[in-house]
Amino acid sequence: MADETPAPDSPVIDTTVPHSARIWNYWLGGKDNYPVDRAAGDQYVDVFPGIVDIACSGRAFLARAVRFLAGEAGVRQFLDCGTGLPTADNTHEVAQRAAPASHIVYVDNDPLVLSHAQALLTSSAEGATSYVEADLHDPERILDLAATELDFGEPVALLLMGVLGHMGDHKEALGIVRHLGGALPSGGYLALYDDTDTDEAHNRAQRDYDDTGAVPYRLRPPEQIIAYFDDFDVVAPGVVPCEEWRPEPDQGGPPRRTSTLCGVGRKP
Image (cartoon, rainbow, N blue to C red; front, side, top):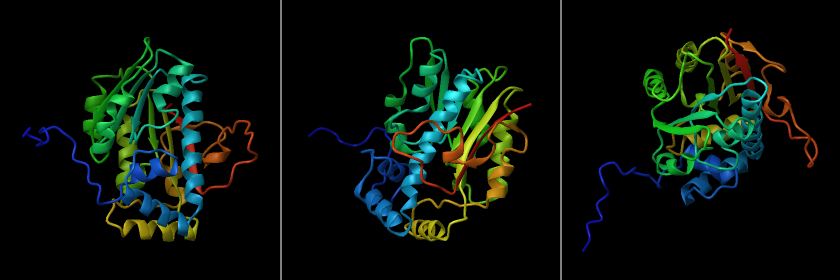
């Protein structure tokens, strides 16, 4: 009988506990999830149906922000921390449609994301796409690994899309933003979104989710999310709900309101 023992470097995927990246994938209509994730996602939706709108709105903001950065802002390097699972319009796809020479470094520490890294490691012939395994709790390691792929002497866009809530303490989250943002040169950018604690149904659904044994996610007051941009000049229209950040014509009518704040800032 062939030896079926996993190789030492094979990612170990726990399918008994729900995982935020897989649940997010489920809400976005993806297929890279398991029954435990779908059950947790459905339970969340039962308490707070607006989470699906938040997932879609955040994803749409990512695409608009990257188009702005690669187009109007002229950025050619992107550091996307907390990549998540691949779906439509990944960062490298959006950036390289606008500017084929763009170089994207994805950062994540999830074994399922790691197992899908090959799907992310595609690029235009002119550009490059890389993946590094690192934890947001260790920003210095992120910077060390990213520096082997990116030139921090030139503008870099730091993307933190829906990930800072995994830092349970606001001071730690703010410190991570300042540590990573501090490595950006003048002309670099920070783009992020995160959920606020202004909707009680959302708060209740999140507490229920945290009780499942999954990694908790902290919803924060708006002023704490705004503070992430303290060292940046925020571009118009400011730190606003995702659906209000440079919206594009929508055939389906006006977007639904969300309590998720987003913004893009330029480092002076």
